[in-house]
Amino acid sequence: MDNKLTQFTKFSGCGAKLGPALLDKALCGLQQPKYENMISDFSTSDDAGVYRINDETALIQTVDFFPPIVDDPYVFGQIAAANSLSDVYAMGARPITALSLVCFPKDKSDIETLRAMMDGGLNKLIEAETALLGGHSIEDEELKFGFSVTGTVHPDKVLYNNRPKKNEALILTKPLGTGLINTALRGGIASERAIEAFTESMRTLNKIAAEVIYDYNVSSCTDVTGFGLAGHACEMIADSEVGLSIDMKKLEFLPDAADYASMGLIPAGTYRNRDFRLKFINNSESLSRLTLDLIFDPQTSGGLFFSVAQEQAEELLGKLISRGVPARMIGTTQDKRGIEILE
Amino acid sequence: MKKSINGTGLACPQPVIRVKQAFDEGGFSTMEIQVDNQAAVENVTRFCENSGHAILSVTREGEIRTITIENESYSEGDAPPAEPAFQFAELGKGSTEEPLNIFINAETIGQGDPKLGSKLMEAFIYSLTEIERRPDNILMMNGGVKVAVEGSPCIGNLKELEESGITIYVCGACLDFYGMKEQLAVGKVSNMYEIASILTGKGNTVTVG
Image (cartoon, rainbow over all chains, first blue to last red):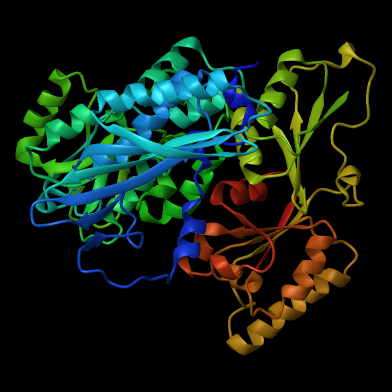
């Protein structure tokens, strides 16, 4: 049986996400009763839902699943788990339990593939000290895999994605470019080093990054996924009086990702992200197309992106790096609303 | 030698990969590739721009976009001389003239009474459906985008023009600015790069507004 998982799928990874414009339209105006203990629901665009159990504990719930982004089923399972767990880490919480979701083409694939995928997922759940309680599987034309993950956090320590403050530094904990490399991979021309680097990056948990930032005054935090760095940055400041300034020279990209952008190996999601969010970027007219292609590249299992008080930023960055997290300080908050990209 | 590639129905990034492979193999003076989504057009544009291949035209009929690309490294001696590199007739324009662009940059025509200006715009768009030399591209920017949104008296005639093979480019940033993206009734959402490429490319442009 052919194990080239990515060849079966039309979209892959977070590029399969519905575009932000479509989602906004579908959910616009839908409401549910205001439950007393519900802190955050689908109406905000945060990484996960938040529900208060008692004064000490809030429940964090999230679900994420997508088509294969790499060919090896074990590695795909690892990435799917890392990606699903990431939303819990982005809320400042600790994951505790998970349920698996499988859509499986039983005529096109085999049981070893399914087993390897589950095995890879379990490997990452164990690393995250998260218990797999069960799951659900259905037959489908295209393979899809992921997890619903539940975590807990003190209600006062929840990290929302849209509360940046003045005089803060912006830190990103993984390099960018997974969408571009995935597109090159699907086109059959990705380099060995690019595939290796993006695989390693995607299957790395945001666990250590989340542990480190817990002790600092982080005001806003999200994980960079389908909307790209710029898309998630827009969500951070959409309702804020504070803006963001991001320095392209400070961003780290996975090997060969920028070359793939120049070659036109750009996932369709990049254009959807750009068209929807471009108006938030104050200086978009003066930016090169390469810059826009890079900052709107949809990420799968991307890093944590957060704002932290300037006076703590250097120390926090040092601690992240000393624990092996490839973090970078990529910009600052600014008084002017909107987003400024420095080329 | 002209090479044709059918890139419709292919998932990203196959269209741009096919173009790259064709250039790697060579042996043609121009290439025509058909694709069925705007992302593929953008991808092929980036590939060509960064590898030094000139895009001669991008035309659209319904969902099908046809991109014509020049292969500068092809020399005539490599193969028997072929038909002229670029034929508008093949693009359904029925003309071998230079492309004609109409650039509409306001909701009304001319300075003066806005009611009159609006009537003039309506009459102008109608006249385009009647005159012999129809334009190849209509480009709308700033207030001009309002001519193509729901409620405009020009929609019917613009649709007729679009069906006859004319491409209508509507500035997406302008639609966003006026909060009218959802109300776009005719034409395709475009961007400054595309519009600037057409206005500075081959042919003549008439500005109305």
